Image (cartoon, rainbow, N blue to C red; front, side, top):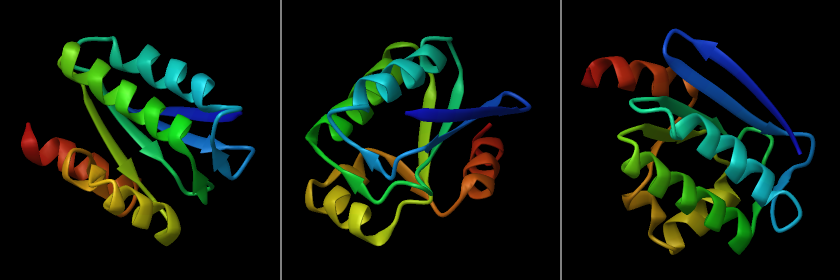
Length: 116
């Protein structure tokens, strides 16, 4: 899985790419990359799902692991650009109540600064 990262001030934007799926074959890679950022205390991570149109239980496991890591290290994670099909799964599993999900990376960045 190709994961592009860029830094905007103190916020890391991570764009999942190359394949349109977050599933068993690449979820571990995504989990490792997210946790690498989130283990830094007070870090802020935006995960951009623009290219993702399918996610399976391994993908959800990677996200939940990242959320757990963020809580342990007092970091923040936000998700954005989630397409309708993936969002329906997130809502079905009621994960929309535990993840901060916004429209796009700019909305995530602005929401970090409005909380600080």
